[in-house]
Amino acid sequence: MNEKPQNLSRPAAIIILVVIIGLIIAGGYLLLGQKNKNNINNNTSLNLNSQSTNTSDWLNYKNEKYDYQLNYPSDWKIEVIDEKNPDNVIIYTEESNHTKRYQLQILIEGNINHLSADQLIEQLISNNPRSIKCASKKIDKYLSTCANNIFVFDGYNEELDLVVDDFHYRIIYPVAEDNPNYYDPLENYKIAQEIISTLTFI
Image (cartoon, rainbow, N blue to C red; front, side):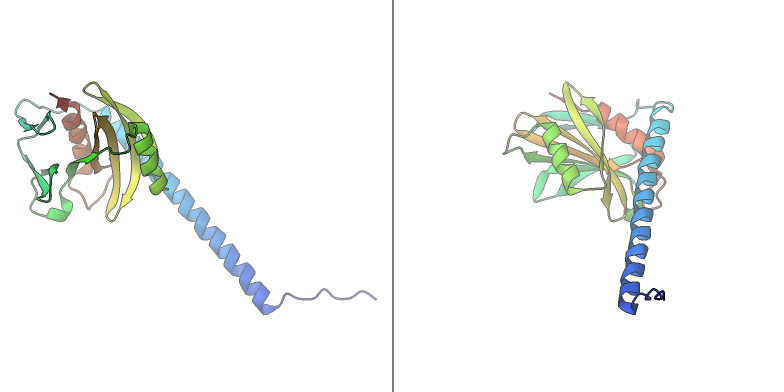
């Protein structure tokens, strides 16, 4: 006489159901993250291939302590981020709504461990698992390393890391994607690249 197979106990069935739901959620999360990365890369490519910005009326900023200078649009502002850290500056669109302005930050730190730009960007990526390495950029005579898809509370950032002498330069700005938290991020990403291209060390 064949015995009937025993049904799963209620606790075991609940555990299996929770595991299945967890796998579905994790799969959806990974797909969404990959889609976001693809969108960022596609938008960046489209943006950089568009017509160059007119820079004839741009202003010049010079930092005499660290011997660098750059140009920025006359309708943007530049200021020190924090009086306690006067070496860090922010360049941003002149918008009345602070939460929607597009901004480019330049942060300068001592490179006390004498790490290379590659080592610094790998360290950044290890602390931000969803971030990805992007193409390096030459800034003046120095080669910077790049990471994007760095999540912040209202969107994603891209960061360039640069080592000059004993200092670590971090250049941070929102990625090229539609985001209501920033003012015209697609166009201003292109302008940010133009600003970075004018950065030179004296």
